[in-house]
Image (tube, rainbow, N blue to C red; front, side, top):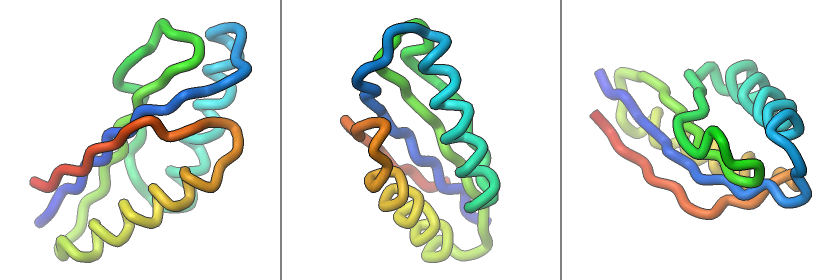
Length: 93
């Protein structure tokens, strides 16, 4: 069994309140859960308006499969226009 963890730091330009940030993050998390069947949570920068850190976790019997899924998620997130990816880290357990 493999657990793949993606920690991704986002910059959300044009956000003026935590409420706006929460709306965008809620949408992103919902789409990721529906499209990729992964666990998603905000794990950092909770009180900063224009920054967010998301933790995304998937599980599989095959490391290549979970690695491919996390790559697809990164590609999908990279195409989104509402935010920029500042940094990310992938770990396997």
